[in-house]
Length: 215
Ligand code: CO
Image (tube, rainbow, N blue to C red; front, side, top):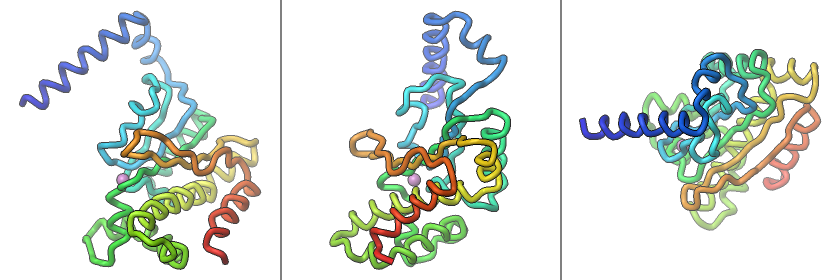
């Protein structure tokens, strides 16, 4: 119960500090949300998206799952995406992976992990596609880091292929898609790709991704 008490105590401090700085904050926020960002991140406890980006409540719409996957048949993700793009009209959709991601790590192995293997099959596919490049690295750590990056690039690509984003781009260059990786060792976000706002920009993204592999 000590653990629970700690988070409830912290919650009281959080609420009172915000109210102290801006007495009408929660009342205004309860009325509506106008976030500029949809953040798609990993469920990992070491990647607290709101904390590491310093946003206030109401600024960021968030979807998290194991290894920040954008799976075209995932109704949960698609519902979040549709609401964010078509109702909230977010300007930015950010896919954020992270180093030492357990999901990506599991996809590096050939041993079966059960149910989660279904979820990770897309990362294994990315690993297969980039096998030559990945094998060119000397250490397993480097291969792991590169697969984390490739996984993010692949999810940005998947996002761009959804009918929701395709339709939005017919209306104008919004949302902008971005891919980032969070470093657990330094707490910093590293931008892999930014400002993807059209099918042409996606083509450039893919060329960049494939150039490294050489096909
Ligand atoms: Co992870």
